[in-house]
Image 1: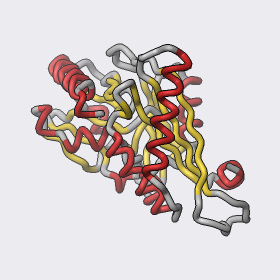
Image 2: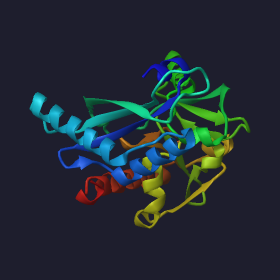
Image 3: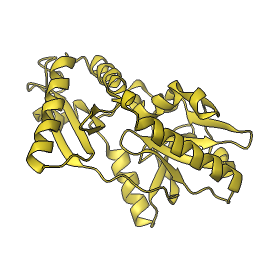
Image 4: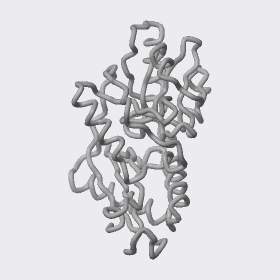
Length: 261
């Protein structure tokens, strides 16, 4: 993994798994393939899936547990070289750890006003270079907040440390920033977009301004591990909070279904 350390030449994937398998694996595989194509790496999907399944099975047997786990797959280009790589082959490591799902609770947050995300194709993959998220998480902790919203260079919302951002507008539309705004192509984000009709709410990708967050009736972040996690709205809006809770519960129920594994 030398090139990962020296140049950040790679990407990673985080997934939720239990004894039924890896949740939303087809979505993860699409993102893995997209990242490999972008970096020009030769990815063997069957080999990766077998290794992930074996890592899960080994963890469950060794620890005698059957609860959910977090999988972290780190992929890096093999070989040495300087900036110009010597090969398109890859190597990977897998980490498995228990995961404790969070109870429903609105979390505090703030906006980072000097650390901006660039809106490029690299923004959509989970690059090994995660410094913006590390610094944003550190900033939130220093300010006594639980999450931090990151803006793009246009001053619009890109995403949060904990995942993609969704907000319910006063007109009843659930908006999430488009991929062109500089956010990661989240697996849970895509699942919500693909199944929008199930929630009884119009869901759309578009630009999301800071003012829209201030006016939102409900705000949440999403990721592959925890599903949807609500954020506190600047002013209490009971109707929006009720709709938001229903949305999160519906998503939770859908993710628990065997068809997601």
